[in-house]
Image (cartoon, rainbow, N blue to C red):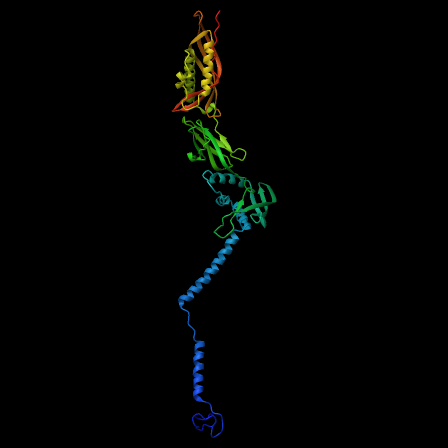
Amino acid sequence: MFCGECGAKNEKGASFCAECGAKLENNEEKETKSSSSKKTSQKKVTRKKMSKKQKIIIIICIVVVVVLFSLYQIGAYLTNPKQIVKEYIEAVESKDYDKIYDYENFTGDTTFVSKDLYETKVKGTLEEIEITNYSVGETTYENEGLTANVKVSMTVTNGEETETGDITFELTKEKDKKYLIYNNWSLDTKEMFNVSLIEDYEISVPKGTEVTYNDIKVSDKYLLDTSTDSTDIYSLPQVLGVDTKVNFKLANGMELNDNVSPSSYYDSYDLEISKNDFSAEEQEKISTTITNSISSAMEGLSTNKSFNEIKNNFATTQNLDDLEEEYNDSLDTFNDKNYTISNFEITKLNISAISFDDNYNIRVNTRINYKYTATSKEDGETDDNTDYDYFYCYLAYEDGEYKLVDIDSFPSVYAYFF
């Protein structure tokens, strides 16, 4: 080995230079240490490079996190009660009727909740007023956070009049979440438009009547079990508290139209009719039925027939207990008389009014003129008489015909023999 100071050659393994005495350094150790140091350094410096695919994945993950966070923030902002109220007022201000309707958030069976009727009602209100300025205040919470109240200061112009006041909108937190993660607030809009929702609105009509509610045919699935032999009762799950047109097509082919105004006070409707709803032809049919039915009954009374012998002249699908009772009472009276009756004839029948009774039978107010012959049981003397009286006749419509169901009394007959 050589001296690092003077360059003299020394024996292998010597610690000091023989010429200058300088300390000799072991080159093998130095080389070994240097080699080891280099390897260690190389280990420290050498790093595995990321692939292009890994870099893309990392970038995508970062972008997704940022987007999701942004969307969450946007969603939280849009579902905030204050923002909901603000957007609702903007819809009202711009008269966006579709958006205003969507805020109603009608649920359940909405078959008869008409969007057209709702918009008509709202348009009628907004034609008279205009929101010229508003300011949405802070939100307060009640009922353990289930109710939110948002106060709004608003300036409204109605024609030449301008008023400024405060309106508090109430929002209710629904059980289900919106978009799975946000609170779902439903807005009560009654402070702006008084359009109420009426539940279980009942419509009572004669049996077999076809009902069309605001151009929507009411199907049999809405029929109640409380319907009777003479009455159909429909229950509409939800209707709007606004004027609504309803069409009725009765079993006899007659069509009636009416406007109903459902409300919390008027949550049911009973169809009514009048004489003017019947054509002259229909009134003639009713007169013929009454004439034939009374004539048949009077013939049965005159010949002492039982009710069962004549009941085929009357309604077959209705309860005839009252009519039978009236007939039997009259039969007893006839049998107690000291004369018999024959040649009974109705000479004139006038209809003064037509309506429905409580069972939706057709009630006809009549004046009937009649004549008859009385024959004395004692000596056969005869007496021809004429008379008139007023009667309530009750009819049902069966198989295309009017049929007698009841009458308040049968014509009275009198005879005097001297």
